[in-house]
Image 1 (cartoon, helix red, strand yellow):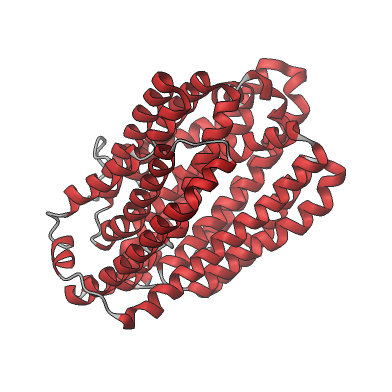
Image 2: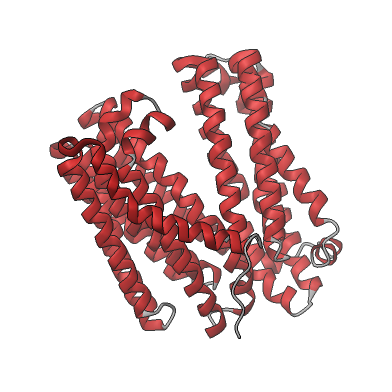
Length: 474
């Protein structure tokens, strides 16, 4: 998981620098337009890519393990054909509807349209086909290197474009990161001993389409319904409590996303290729326990530091205007810890192709969050969303944890450890809410357990990089 943490750290630092430069260069209005272009890019990449990386891995990895490269090439080639068809549809749609759509947003520069389309095409191809091939070949190191190169390119080109040429330069720079990602994957994978025979055997087979599309439909349904539910709840906050309340809530969700990236990136890289090849075996479950143990500690550290250091993190990542969101952040993070543990359990179901569990548990969280949030927001504002998030996470995690324990996927000791860590987070949250203003800087002593857990995580990551020797059995 060390490489995943390194990638997440680079993405975090480069993202903060990019956001700061763009905000200074474009101002509030320009950032509003540019953020819309970014959201369109992210959404369109997911639609065009259809989550094809997962079926490429899950359907092709057993063939790779058995050295049946023709079968793996058939899976990858059929997925590539679906991707090519989606790209063709996007280009036609851009030619027909693009100009009028740009006019509706007050933009007449067609270069901006085609820069956005290029970013979508490159991003979809890299994040579906090439990413799938990197996991298919069990080359998480290549995934990490390509991701770091892309993050740095994205930061440099967008920041320079915004600073030198304003909004137009920032939008025209959108394809730079995806282009570097695409090229990095292509250059690094073309010489890989497992990727080479798959690329040589790329073929299309109509018989693969039902299996590929069933995976894509499942993932698209889970992601789409989750986004719709969250959008409805966040819209309710905006309409009932106003923009300031929704902005304060955004600080909690944004910081949580940074922490989640640290937790899940390494988890996927450590486990997905092996689990897809071997299935839900005792050996894979042992690896799952190791990955969950480290992931929980990372999540605990990140959520705890966010609670204690909120007064310092909010101005750093946003501005001093968001200091008032510190209390909301303290309430939000214990539920976020449960959500991140739930996310790891859900992710494992996908790696071993337990698709119904993946879909059901993903939607269970949203099905609980939305009605609770909508009922609470009119009275409690953004705290109503927090109540829905925490309740949905805890109940869904309880169900998922019980079923995983019953199936033998997780140990009882791990669940008890998670409960202990959650109790510490809740205690810290209550402590900071009640005593932060009374005891002032002395409240920072609450950071000690999270410094200790962070030191342990750092030690494990350094061992993973080989910078510290692991103890040898006598």
